[in-house]
Image 1 (tube, one colour):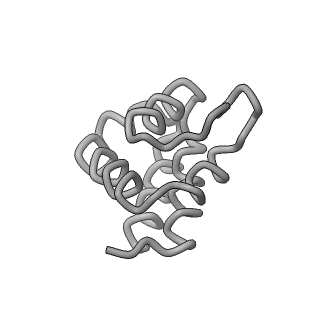
Image 2 (cartoon, helix red, strand yellow; image 1 turned 90 degrees about the vertical axis):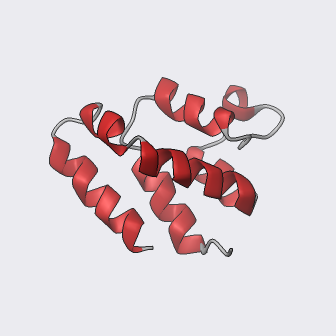
Length: 90
């Protein structure tokens, strides 16, 4: 499996829809981190770009399985739909 830079950037944009607690939980849950994570204000984009393929695939799998729950966290919901459709297209 290969994950393109475009996919990683789209994933980063998608995660930007959520509050920092939800985003950091998803990222940490899938072992996407570096030593000092958010204490050093490393952006979600940087973390996603540096992440290994296995972690990205695992995160994408969870997002696909829980898209309904995640969609309910975004208002207005069309923002979720647009970013989700774009991410699926990658």
